[in-house]
Length: 398
Ligand code: PMP
Image 1 (cartoon, rainbow, N blue to C red):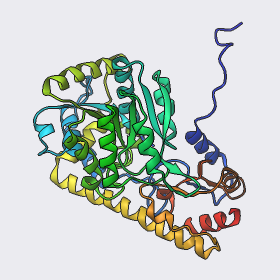
Image 2 (cartoon, rainbow, N blue to C red):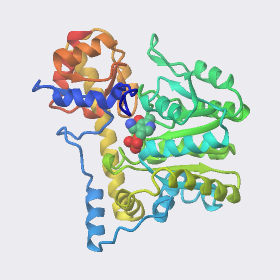
Image 3 (spheres, protein in one colour):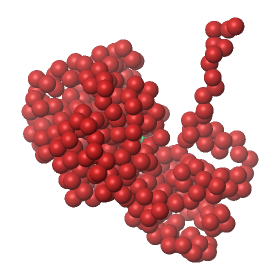
């Protein structure tokens, strides 16, 4: 018997597994709409101009690569606070936010999960139904029981907001509620500002522990507009978590740049929370890597680079919106009879197409068009060269 004879083969990651299948596909027309990555009009992963300029600047005065502090680059953490909460916000000025650099948004969520597991070991986690595939896995691996709150009604192809509110209302105090700040993954449906007010009221009344997962700030309506929900939570007086990712907004997927911010009632509490977050990090990966954080901090703090970033981000946002409109028109032109206009009311990188698992499998096997089994397609991977083929392929399976 070997040391590992009891180890079972784990299933492939549902999304990254699709990538592997795509890479092996010989179909010359293949299109990857599976993974949540923004591709430009030429189907290429962009390297943003602001990132290139920042990297040039950093190279002008090369720095040795010592260990970073456990919580990351101080200027980076500060820039994240200002971006997410506002430089003029009292909560920022009062020192009530504990922010740590994380390994992408995923890393930020994991630090939150590990911290909460020690703070409130018996708590249950509620994620939206459906949610980003990794939410359930991540919180389960951290030792939590994970359940869902209603969010999307497949039969009406719309939000089930009453269900969401009812499920949050029924949750026990201390329950951890994972909420998508904007650009809900996978459905593309966000709740309105007025609905957020209702959610916040329930979170407060039921004394839930809210985590805002903000992986797509700037991809819905704009940086400030998408961040408004954070301001609402602050105004409500709640303590809460925000997991930030710069993977998409800076197209820095592989650099693993993100953060976790914890809004606390007092400056003293924030200092204590920060000290605990640092233990989670120290015992996991010790301290974060230098490069991505340095790039993002430089871009966010330098007025010219910052403006360039905002323009590049708004270009990505607008291109996705154009592709949504073209998808609706293209599907109609390809002969799809059903009304697909819901695609333009969805927002962010994804569209929940409403296609069944069988249809998605056919799309993949017969046409080389890759989306998830749930029917999720990444609109940000569409371009003028592949959209007609995608529309015609969809028309053949519906
Ligand atoms: N949360 C959600 C909802 C996401 O869609 C993603 C990225 N797919 C993440 C978190 C994690 O992002 P990162 O790649 O920065 O870890």
